Amino acid sequence: MSRYHSIQADVPRSRRTYPVAAASWLSRAVFGWAGPLLAVGNDRQLQPDDLWPLPPTYACKDVSAAFEPSFMAHRSIARAVLHVYGGRLAVIGLVQAVCVGCTLYGPIVLQQILEAVQAGPDMDLAAVLGTIAALFVVRVLQALLTAHATYENQLVTVQLTSALQHLLFQKALVLDATARREKTAGEIANMFSTDIQTIITFSVASNQVWLIPLQVAVILAMLYAVIGWATFVGAGVIVATLGANHVLANAQRNAFKRLMAHKDARMKAVHETFGAIHVIKLNAWEEQVQAKLAALRGAELRTMRRIIVLQSWFVALLYAAPVVVTIVSFAVFTLVMEETLTAATVFTALSLFVLLRGPMMFLPQI
Image 1 (cartoon, helix red, strand yellow):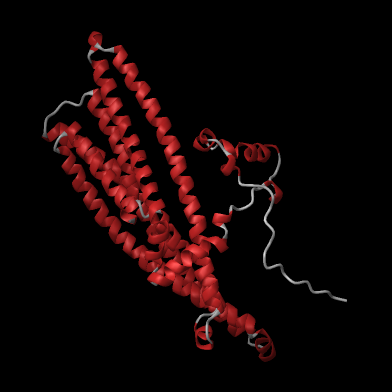
Image 2 (image 1 turned 45 degrees about the vertical axis):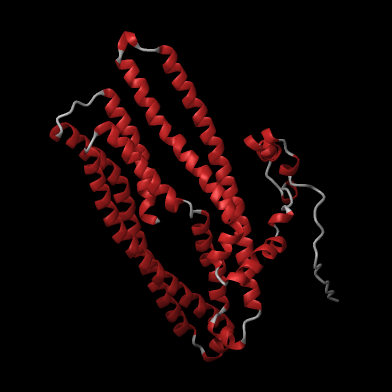
């Protein structure tokens, strides 16, 4: 005889506590509180009981209690995210800005060391060693700040995911009959996975909207101090590259919209097929339904192939652009400006061009 059991409304919380609450400031700084779990994972496969319980502040119940009133007041996801998580995102942005500054300190140190070496016997060894020590401290600080910024970003991601999924589930439960006919279970599942992830990705990467252009501007200013107005020629190549990337990015975006439309249509057809499978079997419509699903899948695959081709051209252009900028800038510096390339100039400029590669790859995606 079958027995039915009710589901507990409130699941009892585990007696274990999240180790961050009892960790010292040094343990928090270097993430030492995660050491025991990593040691267990190094010895054997982790089990669910080995993991810490989710802190109450990151549980869906507490997260939705803070996010839902703000969403109801503003009726905008962007404003609600800004109201609830704007302060934390601003702090993360400031930390990331400091990390960018630490990254730019490397070429400065390299130029100072090379100029000191070129001085020959007049080299101030104590100053060089002090500069190297300062670079070491800056790199350690950059590593710690980058780790903490990434960690805080992930925490915001967890909370924002819980909040948006809660709102979506709550909305799905109160849909009327007309809305249920328009929004199938497949479309809701697609919103739950893909669309929410797109919103979250933009939210946690929102600081890159102002950080990356600022980083490009600072690097170009540093390049101007090294190779003069040849930097503007390189900047012109960058602008041309960004224009080409913008065209490819728009084509990708349009193709992605078509892909999502094809995916929604296919998932809707699959859901309707399973919902009426007995009718299909009774009337022997298997071949017709299979042909319909295959046609929808074919359209989706063709759009996906176009996205992959565009992405290939996009990536190829992104990787080729820094090389072209470097060659053009050095050619103008030597052939047009008739300047001499010293070791300090070459290696400092190359290090700056290497730093320019990352922002150039992300700039067209903003």
